[in-house]
Length: 467
Image 1 (cartoon, rainbow, N blue to C red):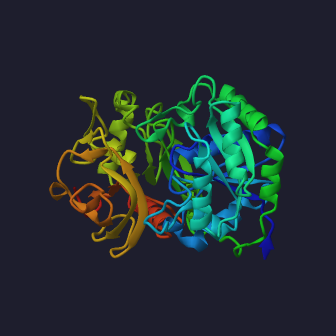
Image 2 (cartoon, rainbow, N blue to C red):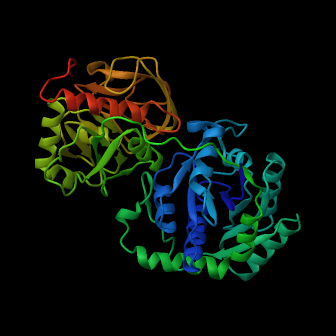
């Protein structure tokens, strides 16, 4: 069945063009007008998706053709966009940038797959007529993209904006906004992994009003809405699978300002498989609740290292639970929390001590980009031979070489823990640097729930493998 789903891709010419600012401003303006928009993020990014969720007031889903394929990305979009009056899809990097020179898995490729109109954000600092070259180049190299307009960002003044707009519109492409350099600077502060998360931003209410003002004052909101509503119908997927029958289990999830990197689809998948999710704060909670498994996602344990270390009670409970065979699945920041200690800026902070090594933060990324691994060793969650696609972005690495501890994954693309290995296996724990998406790894949620059910039956018994 085909559906009419208003949608608009906000793309850029690069990673610092201002597309996040524009996408958030559009969403905030729509909410100010009383609407119920929805945000999506192209690519595997957690932080931009968290900001889009904040701006729309509802979970923002990722759309990534590498992680989930073209069909999976379309299904993810249609399932979640159904009923939303306008859907804003923020691109990543430049419009044409993908895994290779051909732009495979780029924002342009996703826009074509979704038949979504694209508005291109141009950072125009110190350029005028050259803007037209960027636009014409994007049009020629992505002829299948419906480029509905351009937004000029960081405009220095009236004359600057006028000349740049005239150059672009001479190509027959309308300019749908001209945003000046904002007084007080960019309202979205960043750091080593990208933007500061919404949970750590100190003035969200003030920023919401400021962003809505940007859109209402400097964007042609009516024409942007018109372009989104003019998108063609999309074929919808079949009925979404219902909950899987079976005994329900309790799965703890670390969720606080230190651990925020979770795809909504992943948490939804755990629920459909039979898990009742129990939030755990590594920052505030002194006790680990009664759970049958534990999931520790990524985030910023390094910026919270002193607070996490000071919560000795919870660290000890996690270590004892792991020793007793609790299934624990950890990604990136979760791996760091489970290590003996976390070393950052010359200081060592004791962590949970589940894994037999320390983790050291470095000044430059140690792993960054799409990844692919193959499961080669027995572990709590995946069958040997399973291939997993994901992504990684980490500045930390174990202090020891992988040969000194057991790992389950052979890295076929990416870095992992180094030396072609990832996923530390210790008792009933699997801790890896690769982040996976449940739509592209359908084995993940069933594997966690299966391990949780087995642990519930075997409470008090030690699992057969050790560190």
